[in-house]
Length: 157
Image (cartoon, rainbow, N blue to C red; front, side, top):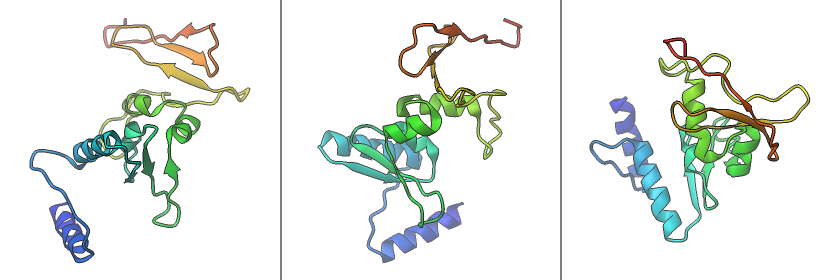
């Protein structure tokens, strides 16, 4: 990987594009910090990233340009796009990612987890709370008839 980073640094330098590296910090941390600083200064911030973890940074003024097919299809992801595609808000995306897991890592996630569309076309969103607190499903639009989801642990609880 360091060989790729060195090559990227050389290309960026040749194009006159500034790069930022900080020992002990990952690129995600630096992007999040710069996005927050830009938003606080009143800028509209566009992050170009193929990492869906960047979706949790989306706000009213921070957007992710997410390459789907190289450089030919790079949609601008905002809160509405995340809600429509994953049925969660950008702030909840990291919770969803933890539940679903990642094929790129050894984190498999929980079976049958992730965004779902009900057969009748209505959508469901999860209201995640702290460990041990009940999780509730509720229909989009504030249906008050929430049902508690069952959770289990290694101890059978």
